[in-house]
Length: 130
Figure 1 (cartoon, rainbow, N blue to C red):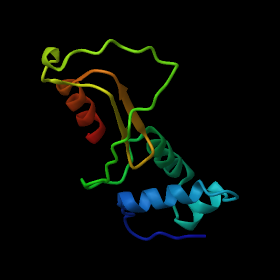
Figure 2: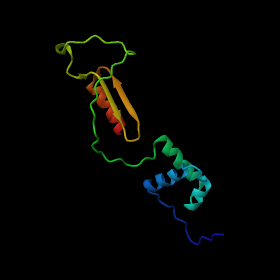
Figure 3: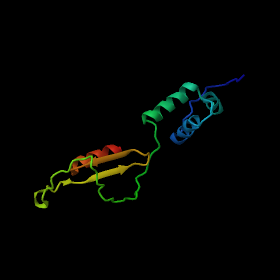
Figure 4: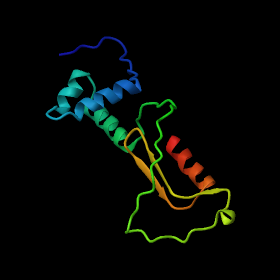
């Protein structure tokens, strides 16, 4: 039995702590209820945190960092039809050809094949950063 004297205060959990606790619940063989009891939180609160992680609304703040970049040769594929080559003088300066592939830290891959306007690529990247 627990006796509470005075006013009970609402605890403030840091995002890192929430993510660590939710990660514990995802381990094989771990009992969800035991994790909630260990940290003295309700199952409903823990369930909400778990849903927030799955929806992407509860994430760790990621600091911008430089990532390695590899330029690969264009793979030869018989599945994709050959597009007619445009002479360099006819190409617009705001497009880039080939394939652009971006692999994010959480293994999300964005692949753009063909001509892409620089402004469209900037919009895609700004959404991914946000």
